[in-house]
Image 1 (cartoon, rainbow over the protein chains, first blue to last red):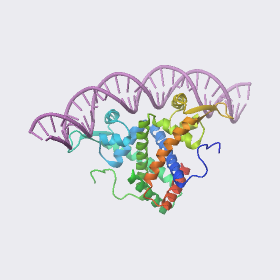
Image 2 (cartoon, rainbow over the protein chains, first blue to last red; image 1 turned 60 degrees about the vertical axis):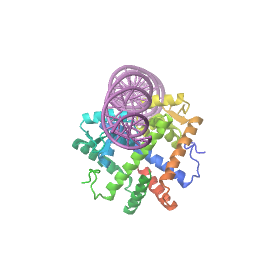
Image 3 (cartoon, each protein chain N blue to C red; image 1 turned 45 degrees about the vertical axis):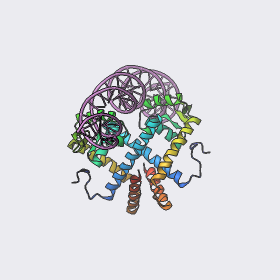
Image 4 (cartoon, chains in turn red, cyan, brown, green; image 1 turned 180 degrees about the vertical axis):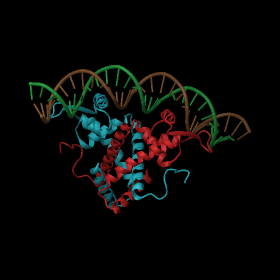
Length: 149
Length: 149
DNA sequence: GGATTATAGTTTGAATATCAAAATATATGA
DNA sequence: TCATATATTTTGATATTCAAACTATAATCC
């Protein structure tokens, strides 16, 4: 048993290996995001909120809370602060008067675009050694995984 | 401009699309992990710690803190609790007397294995629609990305 | 329709997690 | 040796989080 990797036996199936590679990828992204976030003075959840709103557009509180993985109570106070900072606004849902939509302000958009550019740089760096065909294949495979979530 | 996706223009380059797919994948994994964690009564950081120690084996405090994305001060109190719960132990570093190695106990190993099984199930589900060749390609591409981090 | 149950969001108070800075111990290099 | 750098812990203040109670609206059932 290798002293430095006590929990990995040598002859995993592809599935096990793939699983660990995904976990490693997730951990590394998570660590990268953490570092970015701390530098900018946001919390991790706030950046996730900006990312989600930036990529998906306006969303209900409940939907957002589910996607981030926090309770709606937690999200309420978080969104309060983000409204205060003028990154997002609340507006009523068109058809469901219980619901509230949250969306990025212009300032929030700018933050999203800046943060997105950092992600793009990372993605570019990580895939620098790939051919354009390989990047296309990766895009295809990840898209299909996202659909299955 | 599509009302529901105000921030995504229609004609992105592959790189932009790939970037957003990676972000989406990360957000979804993060949300999944959050939900798992809340059910079990751990914190997200604690599970990351268990994952990291499980996959990498024993690690120094500093190294662990960097990978998780917290300060060493934060990690100290977190590890205190995990030692208390008998999931990990501290032991001196062989050559550097400033450093402390953290490693999983048998109980911690069991937790890791249980958590890892959930991840494996997720990975299996997400790649259920792929051929074995596609899974191999995915493994190859992700491994190369991990190396570039 | 009217009553009941479910869902969306907010508020509150307590518990927890986080950081920055100071303190201690050891290592490294001039 | 002395000065500087690194690893960890401690501390006190701040921020985050949850669960539960509460309000408002929607959906369902008789």
